[in-house]
Image 1 (cartoon, rainbow, N blue to C red):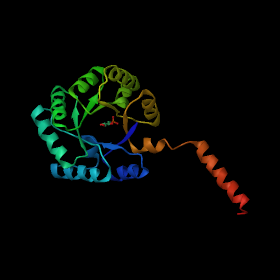
Image 2 (cartoon, protein in one colour):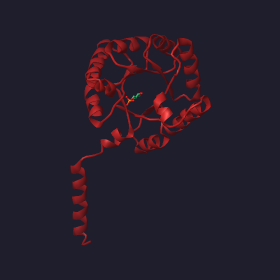
Image 3 (cartoon, rainbow, N blue to C red):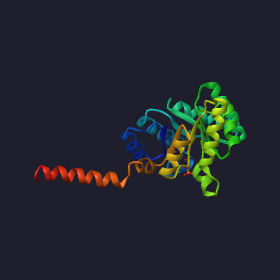
Image 4 (cartoon, rainbow, N blue to C red):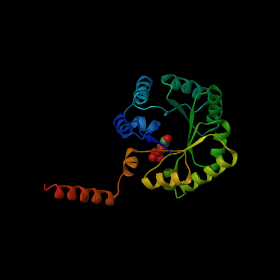
Length: 219
Ligand code: E4P
């Protein structure tokens, strides 16, 4: 399972990368706005700065919602760095744009996915990644994890190559359940990745080992 970090914050991206387990980054317009990144030049420079930290797979989202605009923006984004994956919303023109970029050999991440039907469309169009938003489904009393299981099943039935990138991951159990279900990738905040480290028996066990060592050494 690949780990992507879901942020546009450079310090958090560096911290996750330094841990040695990071496979990529996802951003969205809200995450870019949170970092105060606005204007074409600043946005491009920020994506480049992210690409310079990580090895590959930096999702950069188009703002346009019409086919021509998405193609134009997606091409500009893809020019920033070979590591860029163009993120396209799950709308009619988005499906057409995904199909176009597939033909051009430009990787895409189909975002804002909330149903199995949408997942089938994106796979047929040739999306590289599919982002079902599990936390946002949970927020409205639908089971986000159930959707992940459903899409894994469907994609296995037909051998679709699109990778399932579980997004809107809010906590460690989301991540672990996605791993059980067979999601290819999870994207999550840094705290979810570091949260995997935590276990009270690890902490107390280590404290005991160090205390025993010190005692035996007469310290
Ligand atoms: C990532 O690709 C998505 O944009 C992100 O995971 C959405 O997360 P949120 O629902 O916590 O905003």
